[in-house]
Amino acid sequence: MLPPAHVELTWGVLQWLQERGLFRDADYRGVALASILPDLVDKPLAVFAFPDAGAALLFAHTLLLHGVAWAVLLARRAWGWLPYALAFSGHLVADRMWGFTQTLLWPFRGWRFHQWRHVGSPGDFLEAYADIVREEPKLVLFEVAGLVALLWFVARNRLWEPARLWAFLRTGRPQGSRAQRRGVP
Figure 1 (cartoon, rainbow, N blue to C red):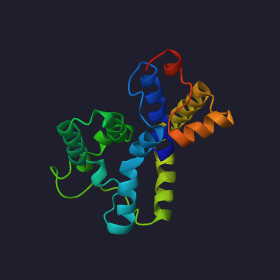
Figure 2 (cartoon, rainbow, N blue to C red; figure 1 turned 180 degrees about the horizontal axis):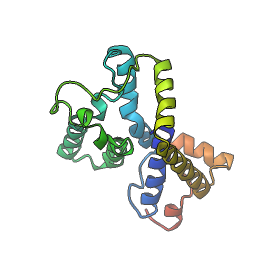
Figure 3 (cartoon, rainbow, N blue to C red; figure 1 turned 45 degrees about the vertical axis):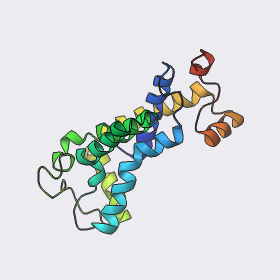
Figure 4 (spheres, rainbow, N blue to C red; figure 1 turned 120 degrees about the horizontal axis):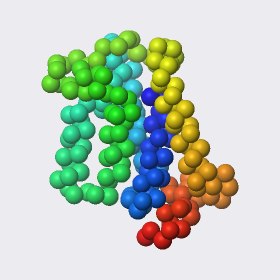
């Protein structure tokens, strides 16, 4: 999945959860960052640290790293971080990592990551993403679903209004959301 859909779908899910009284203090900016953090870690590593690895999904796409993150969250009882942890690990679901077990279960299935193709430069990444869209047209449906979720989120929070958009960008929270209007504290 491309980065915009990760953010769009995560925001849509968070809005839905907030309307049910959950994670009402979550900052959408932080949730967006958490939803693409595995790519923000692994893509630069693939280009600059491991250009010959033939992999674009590295350490941040492993159950080992996500397990450690969850263990820290649980050990510290840092419940305020729960929406960010869910967005971070939701990235694995959105990327359908169960199909890339060499990486998902690293290092338990060996020290190599899922071999895909050479992605040692930004140009190689763009070409790879273009190939993915051609080879896996169903992924376009995820991108469309992300766009629909974003449009729903914008409409739900009236973010076409400049004051509301500016407040959202400044605070990370939609102003006057449905959850707030229903009296959820």
